[in-house]
Length: 111
Image (tube, rainbow, N blue to C red; front, side, top):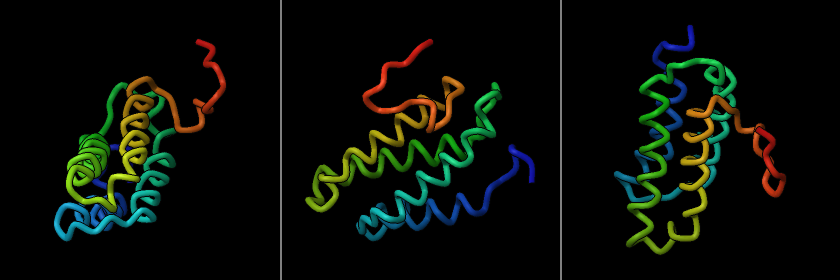
């Protein structure tokens, strides 16, 4: 499978996290962490590419959007808003050609 093929594993992780939150209104933090870690593992594949697969972009935006939208009225989701921030930071890093390990919290970046 090349970097631009459909990723069935990503789809399954997204169903367990984002789709479950949107459809059943059940927030599973471990599922979102697994999704985030999987996306981070794929990031080096795209760090030097000018193209990001739509599936990756859709997944990241859907995850952060689902958390933010459900946090407005599900009190169990509100404490997990930082997870939405993590997904949005990941998107920014992918756009910048970086990976999850390229930025260390509390350490200044050298450009």
